[in-house]
Amino acid sequence: MDVPAPQPRLGDEALWKLYETGVEEYRFQVLLNNQRFQWYVAIDVALITVGTGLLRLSSSDRGERLTALVFVVGAVLAAFTARATATQVGCQHAARAQVKKVAQELGVEELSVRSTGGWRGKPTPWWMKVRAMNYALLAVLAGVNIAGVIYVFQN
Image (cartoon, rainbow, N blue to C red; front, side, top):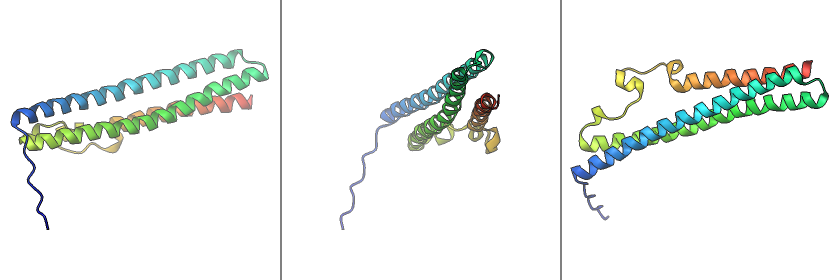
């Protein structure tokens, strides 16, 4: 049985550069997720606004279908945003894990990137996490859009 050759260790300077790059990647992932979420929510709120405006104007059958379509698109967008957020959070976690791995190699793991709960030294309850709050907001937006569709077809 062959014994694997020991892997050469990167020098401290290279590790610090790798750590810096990893932190930048993690920061980028967090900002990208935040910006995407903001845009999707703004578009969904705009769709609700347009749908509400169309409710006042639509008296024909074609107008009601258009109004319902606007609300359906808003509900689908909320679901899409939740899925996109989950995917992006996975990217954030992967970036954070890589930073922690390099920090461990450098011996500075206690100073590494952590979640909010990790910095406080105790876990954050699930309902207090930003992701849970984002999902709650998306559920409200989806609910408003679904209520709009129901309203259109009941009148």
